[in-house]
Length: 197
Image (tube, rainbow, N blue to C red):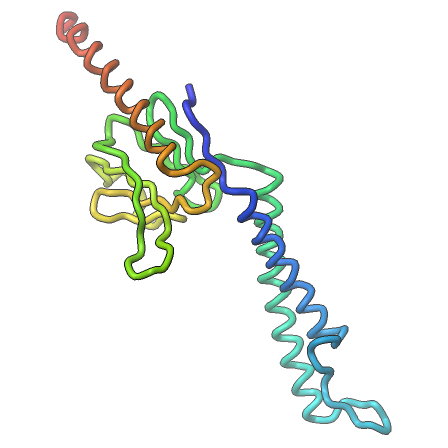
């Protein structure tokens, strides 16, 4: 049973989509339209590109291609995120499901391996430090070292919570309730197991 599902903020996805589209438009201007970017140097009488103009044209093609690839990639990722909404965090009765193991891959942290959950900020000296969701585990050996949108600080997993649709403090509250409920169930089941043994 899922207690809470947290998604990335749609506003951030829209900003990423707009930025990607602006890069693609800039690429079209650099390569073909020349409304903002100046055209390559050409001979006034014949209209043929000069040697400097040919060099400028090659540079424009390189920059334009990079803008198209970067902008197109950003726009596709953002559009995909808006169309296919996958939760970045799921708080369940058995643990946390975090989509941080790689592109579109999730990682399960069972409550049996969680010491505590908390929220906080990361980045000293920043004007607005980013919010992080903190999960302290007993054993981190089962989890990858390289994560997407998260880092390890010893045995504490620090997940970037800045772009979440639900505030990190709410996720902590739901997680703590689910963790407490799991511990109660585990303690209630323990005497039964001992009698059977």
